[in-house]
Amino acid sequence: MEVSSKLEEVCITMIDPKILPQASKKVEEENWLFRSFLKGQDPEEVDETVHYLHEKLFEQIDCVACSNCCKSITPNLENEDIKRISQYLGETEKEFTVKYLLKNQSGSWVFNSSPCKFLTPNGCSIYEVRPRACREYPHTNKPEFISRLIIMIENASVCPVVYEILEKLKNRYTEGFRDYLSFMPDNW
Ligand code: SF4
Ligand code: SF4
Image (tube, rainbow, N blue to C red):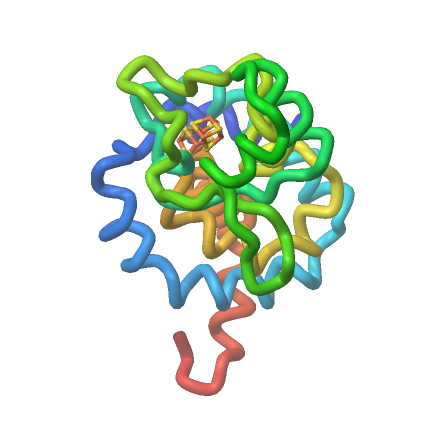
């Protein structure tokens, strides 16, 4: 059966970003168990399903209205990002760095404020030149979803698309996950 026909019915729902913190908290424990289950599944089949869901769900979400990622997490900036954005703003790289950046504990450049200073009511004011990490977030169209489950579960409290992908994957694997849980020590 095609991935699309297995998931068509469940693709019509999208959680309201405003209730995401409470909703993701409720399913967090279940998500950690689902992570253990999913690691035993065919990685290519999981990727195929996740990529399909990524396309469908991003068709339904208004990222400008959501902006949760820009409000709550800070992207890493590469040298190319700093060069491109500072040029766009008509500042030297040094001026831009002093004004907007700091180094995190791992030594990477990140924005020095959260919510991001470039976030406006109409979305990102440097959209065309935004950092690569912003462009690629939440990374749900990349291969090897199973290898990034820890960050995905963390991101489920930030990004409605990630939350829904995990919920819809649980639907997709309902029977297998139920069997897996029945073998857990406390009979979950
Ligand atoms: S640079 Fe733009 S896309 Fe990136 S966090 Fe800031 S507002 Fe969001
Ligand atoms: S990427 Fe996710 S968290 Fe960021 S604005 Fe879009 S839906 Fe919201």
